[in-house]
Image (tube, rainbow, N blue to C red; front, side):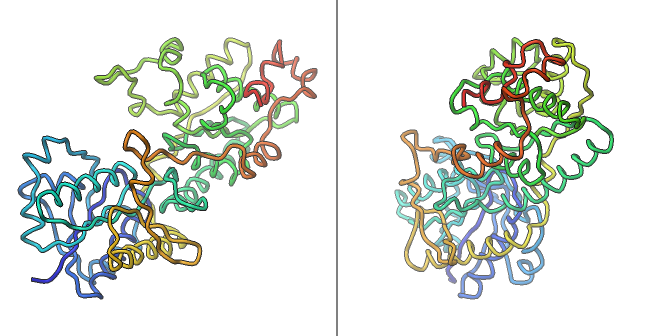
Length: 409
């Protein structure tokens, strides 16, 4: 029987999913392997009737440059009981599978490791190689290399934010933009910098003070008042959704926000629009300080996950896929693919990236680095000591809205 590989996609979509999957298929097919696509992520491995299909050249050639994912994805995470009772070992034995390729974030990679160890214990060892994706750009790749999908998502996000900024300028309003990024502010900062947004709020900027709703709102008011002093009566503010995830739940509850809670008592912020939440809180702040300003919320999220990949990601994803084959031929396993600036594939061993809890910690924005510091120093607008006298026309105590004092920078 011909040697086979199987490939699945876990987590949420990112531009380039099809490019990776179809490039893996083309590469392994050209080297004599059978390529099996597994639908529904890991749930397909714990199902006696998994939905699989062979990926041939024509199918791969038709989908490699499209957005979305031809292989249906899933966020399914198997439990220990699933491994003992529901794992479909026959799928691997019956199809002579030698390699499991997983495409996803850190959770997908950790589960791949568990599966490889389980199969080895069952005397059917296979190799597993992970290809890292996330539009959040928060996997710890060397040399600040991006995760695939990030640049395409940033490109589309910036396209939307440019239009939103023009709407603000045209109508003389302020528009509040929430961007995806649960653990890190890479996408929000990328969109904010690309569109010359006068304020971008990300979790990492609170590196010297505790994050709170009050500080988030004061940063926003600081920008709006500074622009008014400058004679600019419009603008945008970009905020990373992760900012609200880092706020103390009690702080959110005290603000009068009505939330549902999970079984652990944590607020289910994923169910509500962060842009609407931000706008509602800001309107209350304006009312409290007696300031009149119209604002409108805009969400940038699901609309950037399934777009067609830009040329950067088409190339990058192809190199990652070919890199998976190169590492497999060298006998590598239990690793993520990293492609250096010269296009050479190198293994990043998952065991070396994991923290004490077994999870891969997110790569956050280097708030002290040149990209962030230069943006906040030269492009953003906010109140400084030099603006106090002019700002007294709008707020009683301008020092409370001093950007650097708010953040203790």
